[in-house]
Amino acid sequence: MTVVGPFGLRVRDQALEADVQAGLAAVEAGLLDATKSEVPFITEAAQHLVSAGGKRFRPLLVMLASQFGDPDAPGVVPAAVVVELTHLATLYHDDVMDEADVRRGVESANTRWGNSVAVLTGDFLFARASHILADLGPEAVRIQAEAFERLVTGQILETAGPRDGRDPVDHYMDVLGGKTGSLVAVAGRFGAMMAGADESVVDILTQYGERLGIAFQLADDVLDIASDSHESGKTPGTDLREGISTLPVLHLRARAAAEGRPEDLKLVELLDGDLTDDARLAEALHGLRAHPALEQARRDTVRYAQEARAVLTPLPECYAKSALEELCDAVVHRAG
Image (tube, rainbow, N blue to C red; front, top):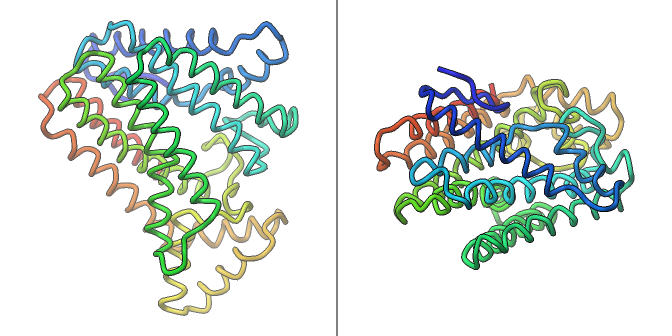
């Protein structure tokens, strides 16, 4: 069993390992090529996060999904590049919205060059992704456009918050389906579709990607509270500082409202206060790390990963299917 890629997936077959490694290497070359500009400063800014590395979770899923057809089909690697470029572009924009200082263990683009450059660099990456996408055909363009609409809608829903009477947890899961699930679903769909897999297989891998993407984001929610910056590659408590109620916080608020325990109410009051103060943020992180709400969020992560695994049941038994199942375990492992 060999570890493949920075995500830590364990692959049980040498041929599959070779295919995945070759595909990811080609994607890496494609990312560097797609982020080059005649303007050296644009190249530097566009390659800032590419060079910082990352898990390449979405390209990895494209490569594994392509195993259910012809993994050497010409559209597979470009599709993976498109998905990762789109993801990278959203990171530039997210860091501006979150006022983040660190991304992938390096200084965020907005901190280094300012918000305007970060936003425009994200736009540049979207443009390059669209250019590659145009060569993959109108159906691929439509799929990407629909996913991008869902992604933006999810971000807007997060910013607007739940409407009156809506369960905040249900609202939040809708947000995650848009913000993260949509693009991971496209990774599964593109990999199978570009490889010429049967439509039923394409549908299964799309559903798998949606659920796995939500599990992946829930694991990130846990990491934002439970880890240090060395583990997560970004500043701990970024969401808390920005007043974003991720799933652990929503579970805490629900418990506080239902049970009224003084210690829960005190922690909620702290979260509702000014967390731009480092000492207050550290106190909030300490409180959440010791609270059952964090473990509840971990259980939710496991549940979505299990749902993703269950979706794979109709697929034929093969090393690629086993790797997709291992990927569910890897996502859960990130959340502890």
